[in-house]
Every structure is written in structure tokens, then in C-alpha cells.
Image (tube, rainbow, N blue to C red):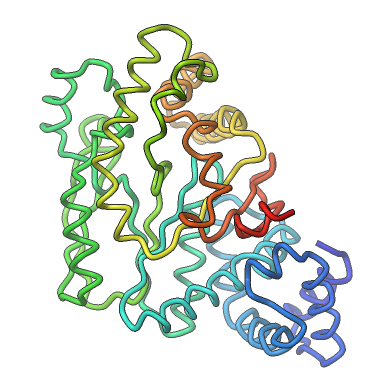
Length: 356
């Protein structure tokens, strides 16, 4: 972010209030990035009104957002200011507008792998939207995992399903019922939750969460919205899909993904958090494991991380399943590119990028 913009935002956090000149500066900088401006529907004509509204919201939510970021280990003040001003606030305001147009609860899908910031994005959005008057809940595809007993039986049927996560390990019908109940405003809503620490880390369902009102659902997961690809994609697939067994596992997973399409049909919008290089997920996983071990918890070795991450690449490879989505304006509303530091480097609508 431009240093002058950071300076303005820092002044606001020190009790200064926005001036007309500052708002004009912010609008001018906003319009410099034409991709992001179009992604958030900001123009020369409506821009000042939107920047003024964003500035008011910034002053209200800043302290609470900083506290949440610190919980997630994000302590760099410039990074927080940048993401809050350039991404989190305009996105939450866009979601509020989309909810108003629907006149029913909005189901927002968020696709993102580990390290892309989908959990942080969802929780910060909940804070901002609450201040805008919207009851917002986060639901992960992890919350739809089959029970421990069901997954044990599943693993006996298909020993390749050594970890929870790939298609087939979720109760898709449970997700459909949940989203339908929310869409039709049937209350109370009983939201399934999953405890990853249960059963010695194997995980299991926990108590349902009762919700009385929902305006917006942030439904996130590592393959939320992903579509099956043509079988020809597995004739010469990218590594680590190398052996005939790897290719068969990829084909079978691709087939199982079809069962999730009725669930994706319940999504009103889809955001893709897209790493500039999908291989960063290994680095990010190592960083996460190192933090866990530094805090006294057990963690995976580098070799175990490689096996773990590559297992998921073999099931749904990012180049085959995620990259095509970033270019598909019919399925995706917003793409947020994530750099090596976990920060958003670009925000755009697929149709806009395709035209360039």
C-alpha cells in the first residue's frame, strides 16, 4: 500500500478524523488499481460516497479487528491496515449489498487452501458485518465431515482415504439440508460442528450450534465450489500424480466430486483465495507446524508434511481444479491472489482479467 495511505490510516487510529482532502486522496489511490476498483464496483462517480462509508466503518471496527489479528499471530500493523482498508472492509460492504439485493440470507462460498487466510477473512468479515447490522456465521466444509465411525468404515472400503478431507469424507446431504434451512429462514438453525482434536486427533462431530438468525453465511473450505474436470486432464497430469495408481486415485476423486455439485448450487457467490504459487502450501504448512512445536505441541516433520500436502495434490490438484476457476466468470465472483507472505497481492473479477 502507498505510504501516504498508510500514514492517513495511522492518523485515524490516533484519534484524527477523516478530512475531505484525505478522502479524495484515498479515492484517487483506489482508482489507480483498476482491477480492484472494478472488483469492488468503485467508480469515479460513486467512489467518494463509498470511501466515506468505508472510513466511518474503519473507525468503528479497527480495534476489534486488531485484537482478532493478534490472536491469529498477525501483528504487523502495516499489513493489518492494508488488508483492512483494501480488502476486508470493501469486501464486507459488498457482501452487505449482495445480501440486500437477495432479500434472503446470502450464502457466500470461500475457496482457499491452508495459509491463504480464509479463516481470518471469514472471522474479520463477521466482525465488520455485525457492525453493519448483519448476523453472520462461518461454516467450514470441515464441519460436514462424516462421523468418526462412518469414516472408519469408509477407510476400510477404500484404504486410499488415509486422511479426512478429500471428497467422500463429508456428509453432503447434511450440508444441503443446512443451507436450505438457512436460505428459507427456517429457525432455529442447528449448525453441525467438528472437533479436530477428538479421537486422538482423528476428529469427530461435536454438539450442534443453535442459531436463531442468519443473514450471511461464509461457507469456506479448500475445495468449496470446485468442479469435476474432463477425464483427459489425467492423461498427462502435473506432479505428484505420477504412477498409474496416482492417476486412478485422481480420477476416482474427480468422480466423487460430482456428488458435491448440489451443495455448490446452494452458493450465491464464490470467492477464490489463490496463491501466486500453489507450492507455497508446503512452506506455509511448515511454518504452522514450527509454530505449534515452538509452543510445546507436537508437529509433523518436513517429510511428513510433504507426504500430507502431496496427498491432497494427488486427490484434487490445484492446477487442474483451482486454476480454471480463477478464469471462469460464470462460477467465480472474485479472485484474491495471495503472495508468499500470506497477503493479498491482487483482487479481480475473472471476466475483467480475461479481457486484459
